[in-house]
Amino acid sequence: MQVKRWVSATSLLLCALVSIVWGSSSALNRYGTTDLRAVYFATRSLLQHHNPYSVRELERIIREEDGERPSETPQQHQAVVLCINLPATFLFVAPFAAMPFVVAQLLWLTLLAGSLVLGGFLICNLSEIFSPIVSVLLVCIVLANSEGIFLGGNTAGIAVSMCVVAVWCFVRERFGPAGIICIALSFAIKPHDAGFVWLYFLLAGGVYRRRALQAFAVTAVLALSAVLWVSHVAPNWMQDRENNFVITAHGGINDPGPSSSVGFHNLDPVIDMQSVISVFRNEPRIYDSITYLICGSLVLIWIIATLKFRISMVRTWLALAAIVPLTLLITYHRPWDAKLLLLTVPACAMLWAKGGLVGWLAVSVTAVALLFTGDIPMAIVGSISENLRTSSSSLSGQILTIVTGRQIPLILLAMGIFYLWVYIRHSSGLEEPSDAQGSSNSEPLAPGKLESDNPTLTSRADENSF
Image (cartoon, rainbow, N blue to C red; front, side, top):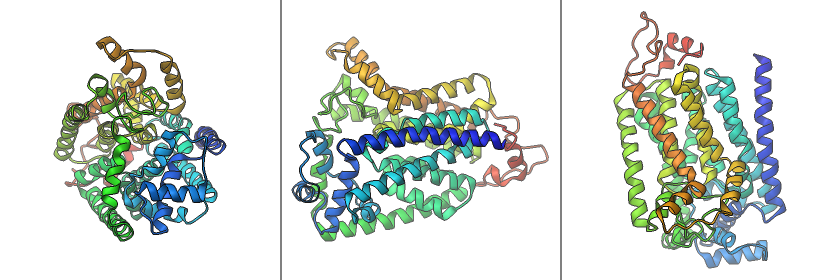
């Protein structure tokens, strides 16, 4: 067992090093971490009592401190000067912004590397009781295909990792205060990443709800403090931030439709459902409404199932595996946000350990999702599809465009529906595992109490049971 763990740990570290070395060296040798530059200089502007959402003021500070960058493309420049980050992000980045950019960048990349590796190890720790091999293989896929996190330095790398750490703390019932702070920071920085994960713990009840409410209180304090800080420096910041959302309009770099200024077949595509529907009808009113209808219906079913049935370790993993793909579909997300799919690994390993067709489907769906949202496979597919000239004027051309350039949202939708089906099927008792209720002598669980609180259930879970 000790040898196997050393092999697993070595495999995880080697895969992580692929992303760390490749992504970081590419960023440092080219034009630097664009996403980090954006939030770094915006925070530095705020520290110097300037409006971080003012394009004019931000451009001046960047010019004075970073100089001109002739090789910077208009899209990269737009990504840096059009700040739409929430004010709470500035609180987190402030210690880095107080340093010279070279030092801050090095420390930031180090923090990204450490948090990503920690998240991978914790997920393996949670799922190794079911299937160590499947867990390590799936996590290795993620760790080896996270170059984009280091290439851009996006805050999603930190937010996702902190969300994973929080889940580990809550499920293991260890280091509770650390878990609360982690999910609060993740929620404050990237609410569209951590929001539904936090919502699960709120809806689940018991100790989970208490943790969720405590995290919300911390998030509220952080958000209020940040808003007061920004409002004191720049009273009109809300309007300026609203103006910067031109970045998501037609022709902007975050436009989910074919009219995006970075091109439809780029290496870091928008992966929300809007990017698929926009191929057929490139109108925000249309593709937003359809996305909310599809994903909203699935989320509503998930909420009802979560409220209806008592919490257990099995249902926790299935619930998270169902909601994470849907999280990525509802609003704007990029591949670096998709590292949140790490939270689907325990459910996949659990279903694989149970065996049968469902186990094979779980591994297939999860592996495909992790591969297609991985940076190396995505770059290969993107390079191939970029050379294909497809017309979106006909139905066949639109379908081909989606298959070659917007396949990720469809994979995520299939993944979300699959895990939601398993979640409901299990919760409704149609596929109750033989030992889910423990032995006949086991006492029933009190409402809101975790299965792990029951000694019988805990010992049986350690036997790799479903």
